[in-house]
Image (tube, rainbow, N blue to C red; front, side, top):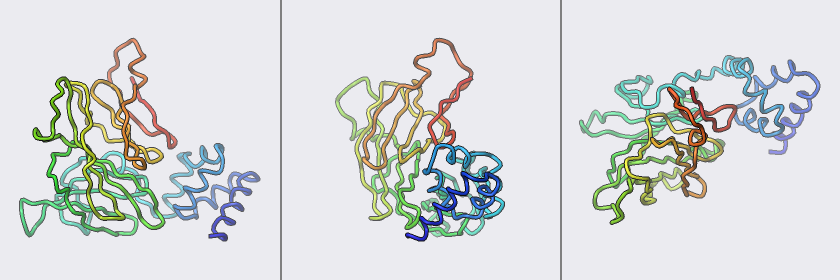
Length: 260
């Protein structure tokens, strides 16, 4: 561990001397080192998001490019080689993990959940949630990447038996899968105003928090560490003109709001 951090310190010092040399060294580091270096200064963090630096790193390390991880959430019939065909990608993470769902060839029409890491070809099936809710949104948050530790958070329609007697609200159920216990937990209902629901865009993950845009242009934020949620106002609620499109985005590691 000491040697690892000494290497990072040397690389950071080189960055202060010669940018080209630093970029070349950075392109040959491990993904873990790459992520740690981002935390050393704002200047270096900005450099690591430069398109040239990212593309160079991908080429040098044979990293799968971002089409799958950006554009394919919810895409069906996607073939990822070593797994059965007709898979649906439910969520992805920046650590290049894919959460997917496939038909069970032995017990059709039953399905199974799995996570998959394309860079190492590692995959493992996951147990289904025991409560059988209908999920409308999935998110996956990697807590530690060294010894893989992640959480999966599906947002689902609540069952009629779970609804409270309060009127004027839409109820969604939150469950959580913890990779250290390999079990699902039911975290209860999230109450949203009447007729408000998550939009179809994928959830945005930033610093362990899940952000989901709602149909009333507010934002649902779920903290994967504290396992608590809050409803936030988006910038759109303070803008006095109509837009053609708006969505949440991730820009240089931070939550952004795209509006046209």
